[in-house]
Every structure is written in C-alpha cells, then in structure tokens.
Amino acid sequence: MLLLTCPYCGVAAEETELHGGGEAHLKRFGPGSSDDDFSEYLFHRENPRGVHFERWRHVNGCGKWFHAARCTNTLEVFGTYSAQTTEPPNDLLDTIRAKRPGFSWRNLA
Image (tube, rainbow, N blue to C red; front, side, top):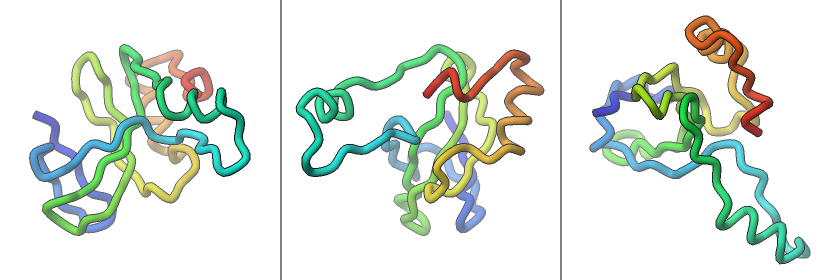
C-alpha cells in the first residue's frame, strides 16, 4: 500500500484515503486545438517502468490535489509537492537522482 504525505495539510495518508488522478504535468489543449492534439491529450499517456509523476487528491482529508513522484517497480515514494507547480521541485529531482543515477526528468516529458 502506498503512503503519501499531503504537502498542504501534512497528513501521511494511505492510498485508500486518496484518489489517483493520472499522469502529472500534462499539456492541456483548449478550444481551437487540432483533433490530433486533443486525441493525444485524452488517450496517450506514459506508463513508464520506473520513476513516474502522478496527480493525487486528498479525498478524506483537505480535499486538495497534489503531485507525487514514485517508482512503478518498487512503489517507493520519493516525495510529494504542490499541484500548482509546472515541474517537479529541484530538491525532489536531486533526491531521485541520488537513488537512481542517470535519471533525467526531461526524458520523461
């Protein structure tokens, strides 16, 4: 079972208290976008083996959305951070690189 700490209220919650929202840091397309762009946004998601950035909502707590970085192989959680950020914080990326040498966030995007 995953244990994620909400960056807003500081509660360490089991995944049963949260709701997963899929991949984080997606580029959303608005009105006037092409059908191909919208299709790409709706249906094409990364499903990497290894480090993955996801959206989560603290449903049975403060109710806010946040991002989490975790490993899909081991379920190791590297950290959580505000959903209002456009990319993972540098200290979190440094933590991941220390545990996974050669990791590059830009290669995921």
